[in-house]
Image (cartoon, rainbow, N blue to C red; front, side, top):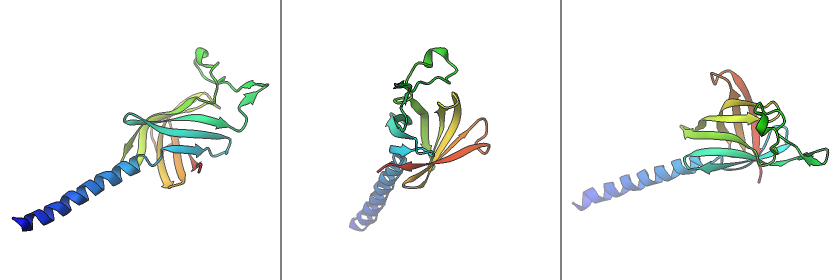
Length: 146
């Protein structure tokens, strides 16, 4: 009987270890990222089972002495909200090393795209925005802020 307990312990140990490693990689994108142009910082955080991201800093947060607004938004009532504090990533879910099935909003154009995020390294995040099919779209790289 004792011989069976020893292998069972190792099986249970590796199962728990595998689950904890999976949970760590799922939260690997949580943190603050600098966009490609290095003009904005985006904080990515977990909200229940999804991941979201909001702009927390801009190099030029003001226009003519007032906060820069979401003027390109197609919804008239949203055009008066400030860009800093704006949620631009929404609904991302982690699956097989990729955060997908979410949306990314581009305040420069006022357009929303489907998106996927993938870590290239611990400090480089590949952000892909697309319409329709994921193989047709634009990919940019964000860098982690330490």
